Each structure stands twice: as C-alpha cells, then as structure tokens.
Length: 492
Image (cartoon, rainbow, N blue to C red; front, side, top):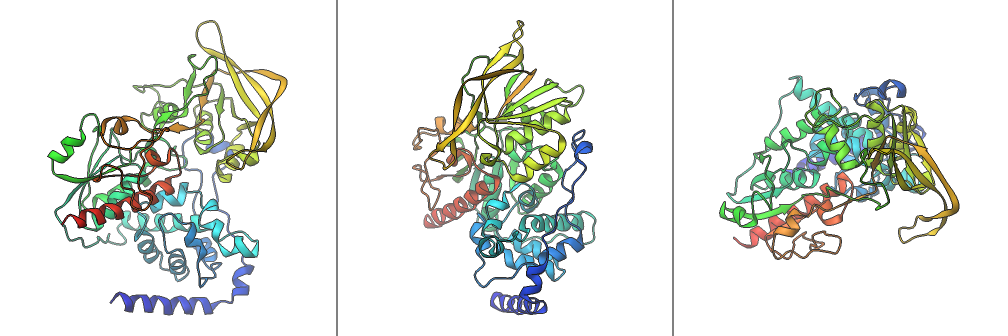
C-alpha cells in the first residue's frame, strides 16, 4: 500500500513539475512575509510576522524546482521531505503538506517561526547553491502549512486525525519539555512506548515558553503543538525536577526502562567584570523567564522586573535580540545592543536584526563593556565600554575583536541584560552517577545513538551541545529516540 501511495505521489509531482517550465519557475520572485509596523509593534507583544496568504504561499511554492537530488533536505536536522510538502502546497493541499511535515517534525508551528532556515535548508537550496538567487522560502511555507492546519482544526472545518498506535507496554521517561524532549517523546510515542515527560517548571515548553517572547512565538502555538503530542498518549508532569525531586533510582522503581535527558542549558554566563552584582544587572535567562513565564512585565506581577529607561543588552545572538526588543515593549526609551564584533559577525538571524532596527533598537557594535558603574546606592547608573577593532579570524572563523588602546567611554544606563551564552543545567549531571561529563558540564554521548555511559540514559539538545538552536535540539531528540528504540528492542 505504501508503495502505491508513493508511486501516486510521484506521478502528481511529475504533473506539477510539467505544468510550469523551470524557466518560468525561476522567473518568480521570492515572496516577502508581511509584518506589523515597527513603531506600533514595539509597544505591544503581538506577533510581529503576519504569515503568508493563500495566494502568496501558492506563488512561492511554484518556485520549487523539485530537484532530482533535493539538497535542501541535507540542511534539515529533522529530515522533513521538503519537496513533497512544497508540492502539496502547490497542489492546493496544505493539510496533506502538514501530514508530510509531521512525519518527522513534532513542532512545525514552532520551526516555521524560529528556526534559522537561511543557515539550514534554505542555504542548501539550488537557488542559493547554483543559481545565486534567493532560496525558496521554505520556512515561510512551513509556517503557512502549520497555521493552516491549526486554524482548520480549531475552527472545526476538519476533524483532527490521530495516528493509530499499537502500545508496547514499555515505559520511558523524558526529562525536560523543551524542543529536544518534545521531539524525542513524539517519536517514541509513535513507536508505541508509554512516554512520560517531566518538566521542572510549572508550565510546559521549556525554552519555547520561557526563552522566546510571544511577539516571536505565541504561547498558543506552543500549546497547540503540545496538545498534538498529548493526543499521541504522551503524559506530562510539571514541577518535577529529575535529579532532585525524582532520582534516577526513583524512575527505575516506577518501571521506566530508559530515560532521555533534555534538560537544556539554563545556567547563565557572565563576563566577570566589575559591577556585575549591582542592582539592575541580570542575565537574559532571568530577564526573559520573568517576563515570558512569570508575566513580570504586567502590573501586580508576583515576580516583577524593573522597567529600565536606558537599557543595554550585551551580546549579539537571538537571545540578545529577544531581550532588547522585550525592553522596548516594557517602556525603554533607549534600548541598545552592545556587541564586541561587527554586525556581520553577529550570530543572530538577519530577520531578527532587521526587526530590531525597525523597532528602534540602537546597535553599538565593536564595543565591549569593561565595568558597570555604581550610583552610590548599589544600583547601576552607567557602563564603561571599550571600543574594539577586528583582527585575524579566531578558531570559529570570525575575526577576533581587539581593544583600541585608550578608547573607553562611559554611557548612562539603568538596566543591563547580559546575553553572552549559557552553560548546561548541572542538576542531572551532578546527580546521575556513572555519566561521563565534559569539562564544559555537558553529558558525553555516543554520536550515532545519543547513548550515555549509563546504558539506559540518552541525552540531546543543549545538555549535550552546550547551547544550540531549537531545530538542532529537535534533531538530537529524534536521533536519541531512534537510539532508545534500538536499545530497548535489544532487551526484549
């Protein structure tokens, strides 16, 4: 039956390919996703990007050349069959496209919004690789498909289809409900495992919930994706800290035969410069968690956060962009990115940098803070920054920043958010005896199976990588699920 379905799919894909010449497809311009006005959106938490219309999605899908060897798939960490889902969009069948995506991705609504497609699938597109033109907007189309699916289901226009799963009676545990844990849990559930996800916080989603603002990833998108996983039979328990409130032995006593660790990298890093302990200086982890998870930006919040008027965010990644744009929405009159390299070296997505500039964020590139100044009461009132210039490339390939002697200036600030990286959550590494831990605090696993030195413990995401993107964590979760499945079946 599967061979018949595949043959039919190949036949209509061939028909679509022939319906329009490659030359005409290549002549089409890439669509631009509309967004809210910069000045307007900087005052609220509404989602910035508005998504594609049906007409825009159809036009963009027609740009796909349906290559014989689809290199775009090489750039997808979760192995979505990109040409097939694009051709379903072109055929006017977005719900069928959603099925294709969900075969390998548990979080399409998330990935279509926050994944750096320009560095992954779209970077491998034939338009980019050989034709020197803008890639097919795979990310925009993934978001379109997932939004179409969600809106169709929630409106009652179509019933939600559930996969037929044959339970195998084997219990497995997942520590962490972030992208790695959710992805791992989804694949294991499809194979019939009795999956329980343990989350340390009071709400599900991990970094998707506490680390990414709603103006970039609305909570109702996260909720919908988690509800889809619940429909597979996955159980979720919040306020459970694996390694503390529940031990390795406790999980075994409860009958769990294997454990996936996706506990992330929630330990913030600082620069160890004078003044970091002043009131008004905090990590991006704390800042975003308070605002996103604990609603600290709202009046009467149980865990309020100060609303700075002159805010400096230190760093150049996506988390730094999220933090500085959040500061604007909390009323900052001046919000600055302070980054020691040039804008070209920034690791943040180009889209996020562009949106930040539209909203009024200032960019102080080639500057590095060296001290935070006390106002005399223990609060930060200014920062001293060292001007930099770029030298030779370092081990990462980026040009190293070099201080310009004597070029130091003092800038008034009343809030500083430090976003210079994170370290792995140490709770499980410190409490699961037998794990092999690196000097960075990450769990060392087998690259092919994600299995640790504890044979029934697997790990992936930031607890292994030390800090990465949502989609890379999801890819790790899928790989670990396959490794766990092979391991558990070998015990039967």
